[in-house]
Length: 371
Image 1: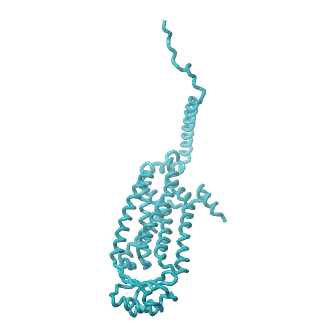
Image 2: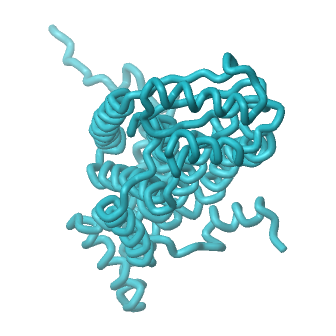
Image 3: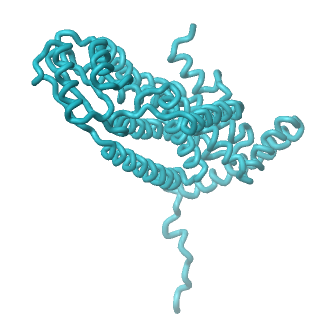
């Protein structure tokens, strides 16, 4: 079995190649399916919004010996009248209970009932009311930041790569990551909190980094495309994806490991539920961004670039030479003749400029002596 080092060398030297560009219609179909599924879920299903977006009452019980959530569910169902409260552990000795909006009398009654159920003084149970306006303000700012980010990214990529197709490919991958990540929360009924929105904005930068690495290699491979007739633009771009594949996987695995540790150890073992929202959206988003940078961003940019007339002519020339051996041999002779002429010109130019070959005063025109 080959090691990761050997696989990376084979991918870089094209001994091993995954046909990502050639099968781009398959990847586009899969991506569009999940994006459409997400959009449909936005229309037909209500999201599971956190208390910051829907408003409500929140209770924190400190100093409890037993952090089981069953007692809180039973108390809220009897006293608070909320059949679906949101209950989570905060640290090792505290519980957070979120319910619908309660009036002062209901709030006091529920505080006393929770204190009695968990055998703590009433003073250890704090209550606050959270209005939906704060969450709505956060959402508006997040949408504004997303729009500004997309516009800024497009301009920077166009200036840096001098290609609008690369900008469209990168933005297309970012939109895919955003829509599908949010759609996963919608379909699975996961709670959407301000931490979720912050996490989605964070993974946009991560996705962009991975995408730019691939595009930089594509540009390097296709920089002298017209000077050869052996491979097409699409094949050079596919080679670039394969050459950066191991790097992309290593970067993704390195980034996902601490997030997985937070989910499994921090949330699963120690019960730090406050970290769950951010860690979960980071895990989903980073996984999707790795996939999109390979299977969406570069293939989309290549698909748009193939509409360029010069690239189409070069591709047709390469394919024609492959299919016609006699034309290929004739072309090779012409190339060799051009190469010989270029070599001779370069040799002459080099000879004229070699140090010590200048004739000095002898090279100057001689003047006639005056009488």
